[in-house]
Each structure stands twice: as structure tokens, then as C-alpha cells.
Length: 231
Image (cartoon, rainbow, N blue to C red; front, side, top):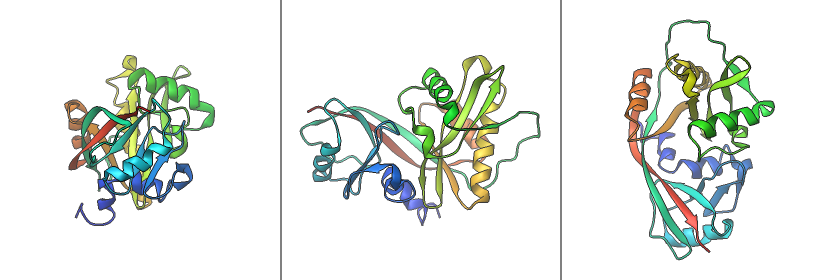
């Protein structure tokens, strides 16, 4: 079931996002695309071939670090591999049920962009940029006028929504904030016919256990490739 439409898009998620639901955030043309600078450091190629990577170089600045997701072809001169990040790609196909509580979840918008950037860079820097919040709906939890937990929507494809930027200030962990934010976003997507998915490093066993507890199942292993344009 998870290899039929729309799930096969998840084998090359950035490509299908950039050529579909999120095309307004894309630069480039077939067979290569990237998110606009300041939005997300992700690029994509239609098929994993070296000539497509050569074409992608025209969208990159010298020394620019970027990510490809999925199959990586042999690299051409001018693109170097920095790191492979193997991830579990997980999907959720039923609502998350959590006990009722008094946690107040707040929709986040442009007025909160600095708060979002500061919290995410404090907890898990590298993937989130100042305007990443424009890609989808973000939600947060505040304590004493401070944003202490966040989750949001990153890559959005036809009938699929990636849940990302899941983080909590270390001073406020252990309060189930992440669970309630994930449930809020996932249940909203399921109600509108979109299947939530996420990516988590294979080494992050604690997070994987949490997502499994919430009902996510692993569809496949997929790698995020950190690359740099060297010329």
C-alpha cells in the first residue's frame, strides 16, 4: 500500500514537492530544482544521474552547502559529498489520540519568525532557515512569553505533508509538548485528506520510539546527502 500513489512520491520527496504543491518556492527547471535561498537548503533532481547533477550546479553558488534526498548518482567535478544521513521515513495513517489537557497550542506566523529560528537553531541547527516557516503551518507552545516548543510542515506533496522542526527547549522537555504538537498537525492533515510523514535519523532511537508510540510506521530507509558546491 505504501508504494502506491501517493506514497511512491516519497522516494524523491523534494522533487515532487518542488514540481507540485510547493512550486512557488522553487527555482530551476527540469531536470533539476532547488528551494529558493532562505527557504530551505534542499535541492532535487528528477532522476539520479550524473548529468542531472551537472545541470544542478548552475543553481548553486561556490561553497554552498545543500542536501539531496534519496538515490545519489556518481558525483561530477564541482560537487563533493560531506556526509550521509540515513533516516527512517515514517508515515501515519490514523489519527493520534492523546489525553485531553490544558496545553495551549498557538499557530505561528511571520511575527514569530525570529522566535522560531532561534529555538530551532538552539536545539537542532542546520536544516531550518529564516523563511522556512512559509512552507506550511507551524505551531508552538509558549511559556512566560517564550517559545519553548515547535513543530511544523516542511515538504508538502500531493496528498502528503512532512512534519518537521519538532523540537523543545531543553529546559521544558518531559512535558509531552512534542507529542501534542505532532498530534495537532497530523490530525489536521488527516482531516483534510493528507497523509503525514516525517524523517528521523536512524541513530535517534528515542525519537523513533516516540513516533512509533504515536502510530507512525517506517516505510523505508532513505538518506539525506549533505553536499557542497566546490567551484
